[in-house]
Image 1: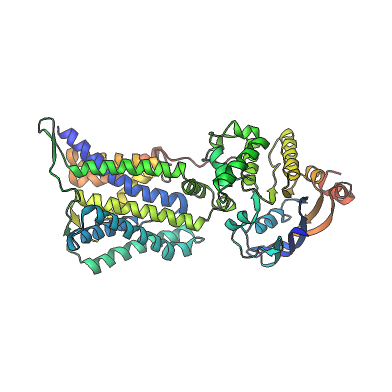
Image 2 (image 1 turned 30 degrees about the vertical axis):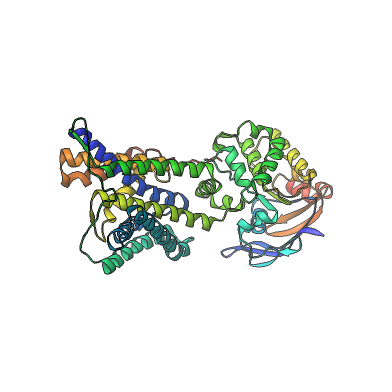
Length: 235
Length: 293
């Protein structure tokens, strides 16, 4: 059974119809990616699942239970974490404090346990615990954003453009970490403009264009699809 | 010795401004609004304490606690009824509402307690302390005020850096959306900040009235505006900034009164605001807003 099931989702910004009947499913243990150009509705979809935006219609089910009407701050305790676009770490808080905020809904002992996991995944964060997060480099900030999301011990971790603005070597590092996070039992829903990287780690992918799903398949199928190649993989 | 006396009085008055400024700055930090009714919460705090001491005959400590509880509740109720419905509204609407709440509180006080000034009895009923062979006199309330300010600053610093809710407050101040993604209930956090700010306003009201013992419905408005100035001078949104701005303004005001003239003192205080804002638009300890792309 799908852990996350989105059906016929419609989201508006005022009168702008940003997401037009998007449906997709994420099975437990999978990495699923939504790819597409700027403005295709990928981030809107994630933000709606996270409860930051209210859909006009459609359904979102998590572990068979509807998420509609549940405020964003209650999603974390259900097991859904979003690592948002642009990272949005708390710049004036230290690295350690940012991680603590990630575990806001967890008990102290759970937080301590997850801290060890996060230090293990991101040794560079451990070296900078008392540094103000705003002074980290872009790559480190991305790692902190992911570490912070991981601190809530999510069942599904949603990542919005984790590769944005990063050097290729860092992009590789980030995607390697995403794979490890997935292999250690976290389901991943990934939104990316870097379609090549996303499809090479994903089990399955959905292609979004102007608010609609236009194509779906396994990562490999989409990587070899002529239309996808032409539109997103540079021929 | 005049200089030293003035300095002590300045620091004491400045400590009151600092405690009021904290309320402005914390509320601004999290709700991005200027709560112009904050000064009037001070006045309400003064009245509650006055009634508890004079009409109910309660000991000062109990009266102060009662005043804090009353103002904390008032702060939460005002936020819930007047500001929360305007969370998504333009900031001008919120500002006008705050001014409206300010007048509402003043006029309600006028109705309930009348326009006659009440003679506030100091919460510290001790004789003045004479130092340096009687040349320097210090009012005990000045010492209590300064100590209260130090205790509050230390307490708030510990709260915002050591506790989960305090860190959540700072996280909310920075990015409400991201804070929600952490599972932080932004509305509860904002309520909490209003509660803390209003509780502090009660303390400030009691200390202010103990030093300047005339209590009337407009008692809070001028100190409120000066404390707002202090918050801006120090850098709005910054807790140490509120302390620095408050004490600086208190000292400037007392010195201006002593050496230049009482009439000009307020003009000088607000003149300082203009100068500081011209030189450092974000305030002395305020942060320029930077965006990392």
